[in-house]
Figure 1 (tube, one colour):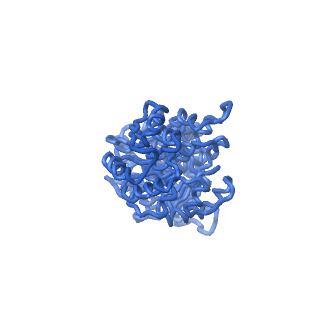
Figure 2 (spheres, rainbow, N blue to C red):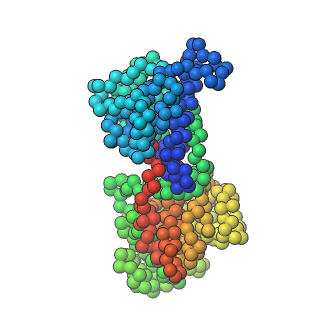
Figure 3 (cartoon, rainbow, N blue to C red):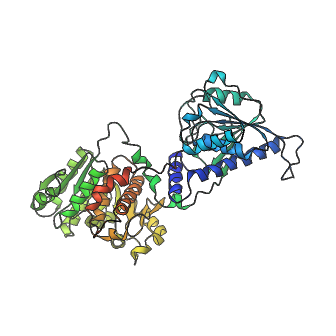
Length: 500
């Protein structure tokens, strides 16, 4: 099963791997055409069903929308030239929303197919047909059918011909099977790559067509995984705040994490740090709000106030950068996690506390391979071998009960049930501090998104930021990533993922 949103992400990742949406559309349309031929043969009273070539000359009506779902139908029409094919485009051709769908419309027109634009539902009169192809709306469209789609659905439902839906019957929510109004009552559905959750509730035959999307498009984190954040804030009243608890022996780490959170969309970024280093941390950036506490390191005495602050303001916490490994600091980190019930990214020096604590908090842990082993995870000798141990990391995440981002040449992200690998980045990112920008960026995303989803996005964005700096002269600094993180997060899509 694959949700409509995840399918859009995988489409875009496939394009990034070199399998563009135009190629996938060709495969999708061909799959629909095969089902039309099979239907024509099944429904023919005089066809030789044992003959692979005996197809009745069927009347086929393709009802196409103006997105990529319609484009799939247009491709299908081209593959059905041996039949009596007519195409009805719902809307004006100049309003077709994607280049590849428009190219396929133009191809049909140039080849003298029976093609008409329907600009008014009152003028819609679908031809008599043995097979209707519902290519109006795809998995990315929800809500009640509007005109002229509603009239087209009614006419298909009232006709005697067999109705084949492309990917999902128009009007049906692909994820839930629900409908907000009239729907196309499809006899058969050809869906692509994997079955959609909502199709199981329908009383119809479903064919899942392999259209050539490589498994890597799901396994490896790619630009498609950034879709949730590119859509904008999750709610109009979203007010993401990040609270970094770090510093003591080290000052750069919490400053990097806090600034990275701002760069990926946090509205405010606070740093709680010992008073002995608070001024130094504040000096890194005027955008940070530094809240000092007594002493020169984190101790258990500070924990109640820190928990109260974080929960009162619903902050996403980053716990660990620059804390140091003193016993009392580790005790304080454990006490914080036991008391806190919000969302937290646990990094660096705070990681050893995680396996031993019981917490109601939602945690994302970001160990490097050595920290992973100290937490009880798999021992991995080489940084370039982390991805080879993805199954072991998944098992560890399941036992731990938290999302894990294991950092190395390739990052492994797992929630114990699902695992993805982020291959973006450069060798120069082995420099100190890039893990802090990852932790802060993750916290900035975690305020408005699912933990596993946020972890995948953060791993990709951090690595992609490094790639954007790959041609710089001189050594890469972790602070260099801050300037390009926004481009890595909101950079333009390659346009390969729309299936509406």
